[in-house]
Image (tube, rainbow, N blue to C red; front, side, top):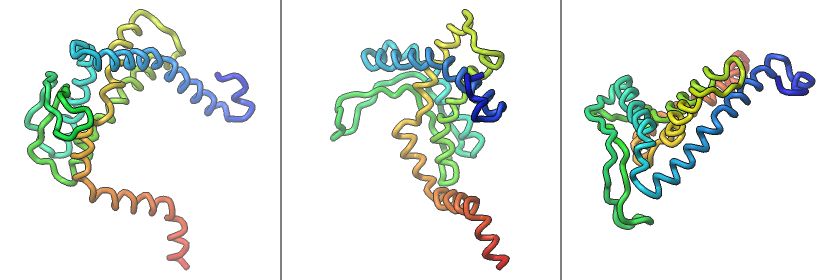
Length: 196
C-alpha cells in the first residue's frame, strides 16, 4: 500500500492505487524497449521483425472488429511492403506499410469501430501486467520474454493516418454520442424541468 495514502483516501482506493502503480512499474521496461524498437525500425527495415507481434495484433483487431460490425473483411496481410508516398508529402520518397486489412462493406456505422479497433490492443499489455502483478510486483525470467512480446504492442495500438481517415466516414456517430453525453450529464436537470 502507498505510504500515507490511507490518511486521506479510503483503504479500497489506496489498494487500487497501489495495484495501478505496480502495473505502471511493470510496463516501464516494455515501454522503454518499444521506444528502442521504434528508433531502430526507423533506422533500418530489418528491425520490423521485432515489431511483427504488434503488427499482427493491430491487423487482427481490424479484422475481428470488422467481422463483428459487418464490415466484411476480405483480406489481411502482415508482410511489410514499401509504398511510395504521395507527391507533395513533407518527407517524400518511400514509406513502409507493415500490414493491412481490406473491407468489402465499410459503411458509416462500422467504419469507426473497424478503423479504430487497434486502440483495443492497449488492453493486451495492461491485461498481462495486471495478471503478473495481481499478487505483488516481482520480476521473474518469464517477465523478460513477456517484455519482448509486449513492447511491440505499444507501437501498434495507435491507428494509422489511413485508419483515422476511414474512421471519419462514421461522422453521423458524433452528434449521437454528443447528444447521449449531454443527456447523461444534464439528465437530472431535464427531468426536473419536465416534471415542473
